[in-house]
Length: 501
Ligand code: MN
Image 1: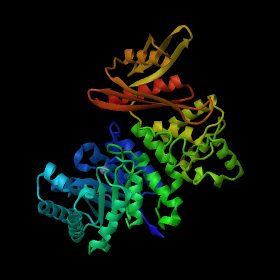
Image 2: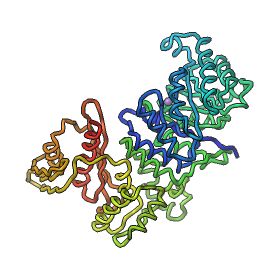
Image 3: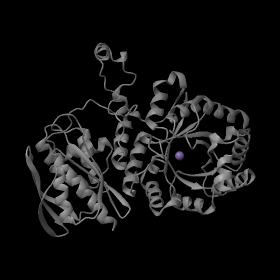
Image 4: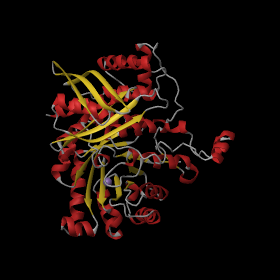
């Protein structure tokens, strides 16, 4: 059985999804989860593109163990130097450099000849290789590049020291037969191909990113570039969970597998949803809310008799456990800390104390606390922003034939301020009162509420996006009372905006 490497680009291409920008703390949190998931390479960012990306790559390199940490860089000396600066102290590092090779890009975007593009690619691979051992090269828009020229470029960059050559379908134009044949052709035509791993990077513009990647695996690709939940530029990238579970479920056909610990899939998906604010569609394969829901009577009947009748993947395989009771109000700090350890969270003492306090409060309101509840609590603690505003009191009244009103008490720096406002509903009234107290000029772009587990006593999780002066932030709140969770999410976002100022 062959092992296919998983190159995760959630933090780079994934972050290029509109509105998905993540701060350094959020990226580190995702990177740690990717390490638990068992991906081989984490593309942590594009060092040259912004100080934030540079910082994120450096911090992830220092804090995340296991996977190779990679930075993207254009085929330019300054870009590559910057990538190297971010990666310098990282034990397992890779520079991923790229240059367009399709005539469409060379003619209309870069206005240079094929010869010039080839020369630059080779020079820059050689330069990157003088800085690090592990260099990957991508001929951008490879799927629309003339095959003879593409093979010429691949052979030359391998000679120059690239140990991975990635074949991107940059615009999501290819279809499986064609893309599989391309990978096969490359293997047949490039003389030194045995000295490098062929990678693929597929986009989902025609809904074929996963299919194209799998076709490539069948034709010898040894690395797949993908993202959690399939997020990414435009229609997104190949989805990690789909490509990994397709190979695992149909090992008989692929005769290949990955290092991914599939039980971490669901947790990875939830975390990425939380930090990017991009929800997963309910019918999404593997991680969608309905992916394991059987509605038809005939199917349910079969499942009750034998799971294999209609279930090709056991939900537990991806870490989707039947919600089981884990902790309750009598659980102590030690049990709480142990459970956090088991879930893979390493928190500082003050973070544990603060999360434990909130846990006790919630345990008073809710009988059983599930893993998902604990994760919601803890993720509030990680990368917490300084609290300029703090919710001290909240009272709402609403009902039939009644104008909803909210009474809010906030701590603003050291002062305590109270205001009452009316609104179209209790959340609207709460938000108006908070806006009045904080005098915020931000506008609310998105408000989403969902329940974390089943039952009417479930924790409600609220996500909001705010925008001010072109900057956007997301806030989260979790509570058994969705009005309180809504207020907390809003205040969390306002604190982030204040911290940015
Ligand atoms: Mn891409």
